[in-house]
Image (cartoon, rainbow, N blue to C red; front, top):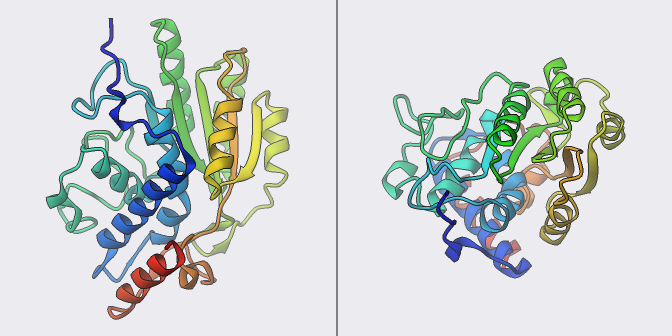
Length: 281
């Protein structure tokens, strides 16, 4: 029998989760400071989701990242690594000493995720691949009669990849109901707004047979409610469409037109940190 997850990581109230989301944003800024550039806006926009997922939803053992009884979080969008590393640090998988080397040549914490880092389930870099791998994991859990869930986060930009829709169709066809896809819809990709018209996103997931909710992805209570509504194992895969704001919590970043890969002047990091604190006091 798998060992039970220690419950000391469970947070139940929205206020507790908002605090953890703020701590993630603080950690993200620290990791990016003095680098001059990075995928900071994505980290800020997904911090609320990660707080709910890691402190309320997932079963895992903080002392054993490879515990066989764990739920799995699959980050398809590998360049959101800064946010995933921040939460893995907060739960104890990544030591403090590694944070300042994030993104440097040869560092363990690369700009895009690698699965040799404890707590990282897949290598992310080539977009559109994560959902297919998550479907495979969920099928494997079902064959093993494993009680866990797979939560896969992907982006609106990835919805332009045909492999995503092949995986979505397979999940519905195989009635994989231990899988939750969370789609971060922040409306941007490398050169500006999302290139193709991919709306209406929620209706498309419903048409593929997914039990779907569409919410404000920076609203902790809405994220909690969506997960609560999608717990039933009823033969349908689950999808949560998050409408998020790049750079959430820092108005200067929220206003930037080209927020995909931000470049920040050396004297600007301290100002961004001050904005974060003043807007989340």
